[in-house]
Length: 530
Ligand SMILES: *Cc1c(COP(=O)(O)O)cnc(C)c1O
Image 1 (cartoon, protein in one colour):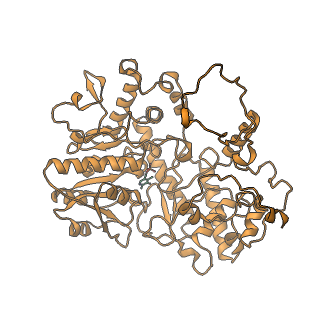
Image 2 (cartoon, rainbow, N blue to C red):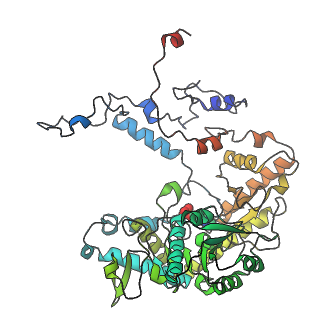
Image 3 (cartoon, rainbow, N blue to C red):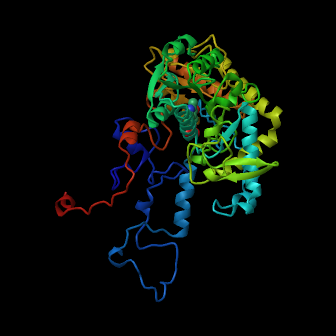
C-alpha cells in the first residue's frame, strides 16, 4: 500500500516494492511490536487542530497590508500528546552512541560523559547570550581562553581561532589564514597538494577558496612519499593538506620530512586534525612542523556528534600564521581574558583575515570539551589515546585471520582498515556486509572510504568501549564472515531484514532529496471511478 506521497505504508511494502521477500510477518498496523511506524507530521496533522488555545488578540490592527495571507497556511496541527508522541517516536529511531557501539572510522564516535553535560547546563554557561555586555560574562571568556590554552599546549602551537563550527569550517579558516599569509608576502600561490587518501572536505575546502588541487598519489603501503611531495612542490604551491594519522589509520612516517620540504618551497602545512584522538599527549603537531590544524571537539574531546549536537572545530596556528587569526579572539591582559571584537582592538602585528562567524563559537561545546580535559588531566588524555589505539588493535587482532588487511605491515592507530578481499567469490559486497551488521544491531563501520582501498571498511571503536563490548563486536563480525564464506548469501544481499526500512535508494535520496511536502491533489472523478 502506498500513501499520498507514494511511499509504502508498511515495512514489508518497502521490501515488496523491490521484489524482495518480506522478512517478517505482516501486521495490521505496520508496527513491529512496540516499534511504531511513524508517518510524516503532515500525514497525521490536521489544519483545524491545534495544541494551543489562545484567545484571538483584541483590537490588534494588522499592519501587513497587501502582504497579509489570504488563506490559512495549511500547517499541520496536532494536540500536545500527538505532537509529543510523534517526536519521541522519531527520537527513538535514532541510533546513537548512547544506544550502542558506533564504529564509524575517522569519525571518532566516543562516549559523551554526563559530567560534561552537567557542566554545560550550569545556568551561568547555558543561559549566557552572545549579545550580553562583555562585562557580564567573564566566566564564559575564561572558559574560551582556558580551552584555547589547552589546545595550544596539547598541539604545541602558538595561537588558536575558536570560532569555526566544524572540522570542515576549521579547514576553511586555516586555509584562509594561509591565503592571507601568502598575500601578505606579496605572492600569489594557488595550488594545494592533497593526498589521494584525504577526506573529501580537504579538496572541497581548497576549491572553495579558489585554489587548484594537485593529487599526491598514495604509496602501495597507504602512506605519503616525501619524494612524491617534493616532485609536486613549486613556486605556485600554497600548502599541503595532510591528515595524520592518515585515513588508512597509519601514522605518516615521513611527516617531519614532508613538513621540511613544504616549508623549504615557501608553502604551508595544513594538518587535518580529525584523527588527533590517536596521538593526544603523545605527539605535538607543532613539533612536526604543522602550521594550521583543526581540532574536532566532537571527535577528540567527546562533545556530542552528528545528529546529537552542533560541532566545534577550533584551529590552532603556528607563529607564522598566528597574526592572521580571524576575529574575534581573546587576549590575556595580566592573566585576564579580554575579548577582541574589531581590528581596533588588535595588537601591533595582528592582521586578522576577517571573521568566520557572527559570534564566538559553540559555547556549549567549549564548556563540555573543557570539562572533559579537566576531568581527565594530561595523564588521562594520554591514556585515552593509548586506549583508543589499543582498542583498534584488539579489534584488528580478533579479525585479522578472517578479514583482509590492505596494509598488514603498518600497526594501526585509533582505527583499523580492512578491505573486501575476504569477500572475493562470495558474491557479497562491502555494502551487503554493512547492511547485515544492522540486522545484528550494529551501526556499520565507515564504508568505501578511504578511496585508495577497494571496498574499504574502516573501524574505529574508540577508547570508551569495554572489553566485553569489543568481544561481542568481534564475535559478531566473525560470525558474519564465516557465514559469508559458507555461502549464506541471502543473509547479506537481503539485509537489513529486520530494520523498519530495507534497502533504500540512497543515491537518489542524496541526489534528488524531497525536502518539501506537497499536499496531495484531490482525486479527479476519473481516478476515483477507477
Ligand atoms: C570528520 C572529518 C572531517 C570533517 O569534520 P566535520 O567536523 O565533520 O566537518 C575532515 N577530515 C577528516 C579526516 C574527518 O574524519
